[in-house]
Length: 69
View 1 (cartoon, one colour):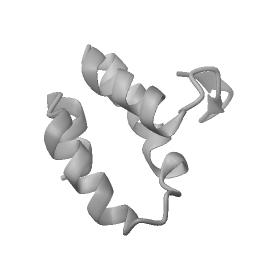
View 2: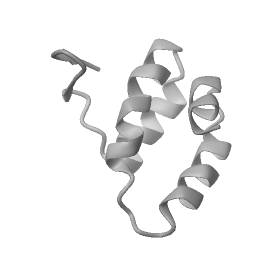
View 3: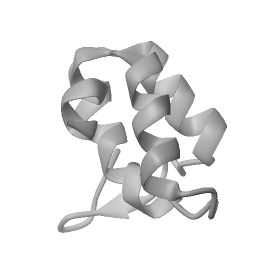
View 4: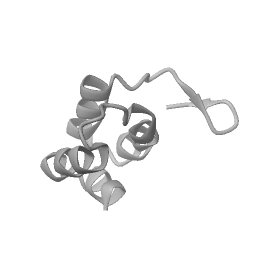
């Protein structure tokens, strides 16, 4: 559901789901980092902005076999 909201560009639903999953702990940055690639590929700028600004996702991070976002 989280990935679907991200790829659909549904920022409001994504925010609600992230809050539910986090339970107020504030440690979901690692979990949502993988969504940046998905949302960027789908052209969902609003979701990308949310992930980078809210979770400080590193757009220069290396993932899967040395590729970056």
